[in-house]
Amino acid sequence: MRFRFAQSVAATLLALVAFSLAGCRQDMHDQPKYVPMRASDFYPDKRSERPYVEGTVPAGEFQDGSPLYTGTVGDAPIDYFPMAITAADMKRGQERYGIYCAPCHGRIGDGNGMIVQRGFRQPPSFHIDRLRTSPPGHYFDVITHGFGAMPDYSSQISAQDRWRIVAYVRALQLSQHASVNDVPVAQRGAIKKASELQKQVEQTPVPGTTGPQKTEVPR
Image (cartoon, rainbow, N blue to C red; front, side):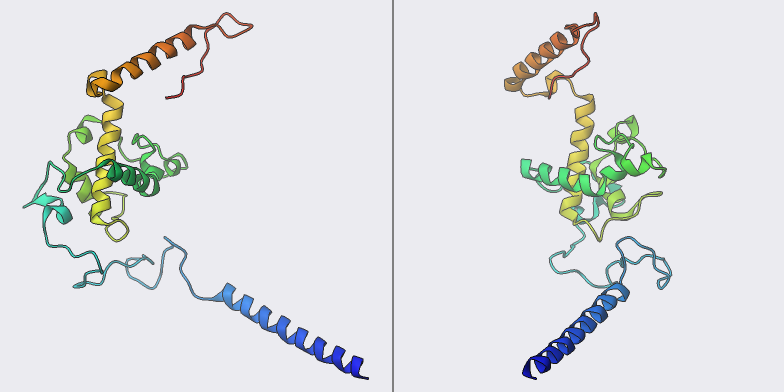
């Protein structure tokens, strides 16, 4: 008798737990939420990610109207960086670029990012003369306010990180148009050695053929 009663209690408890878990799971499926970057019919601008409330300043992001936060002096974009750029800043800029910029602009800034390859509008290459000569403040302004098909990133990327991204873009531009004279003297020997090794690889016939190898020396 006691065994049957214990079985009955256990079955009842199991049913209650299963019912509770099922209800909880369904609530998790049906809860109202926005998937990142998904459009919203609630707001007039159709953006589910909302900009800062007008007249407020997010904690830790006080902006005093200086070039650090505007990228301009008057109406003109500044032609310098308003903050020191260290090796750590460049690494951070590379990381942020990879997250926010590379999907459209590509890893080397040629405008052939992954979503462009899937049909999205192609942005101009950073390596055209017009953009190579554009001042840093221009890039900061575009990241802050958007341009053409590109949305603004002011609410997603801090002002300091925007400058770090701009610095990394400058590094990309230099990397595609640099000469050996732009490299510190102490490192030119390594570049020359790598170049000579590359030529040797290219001139070495592939076994079983008469043609040279196509493999590149790792940089």
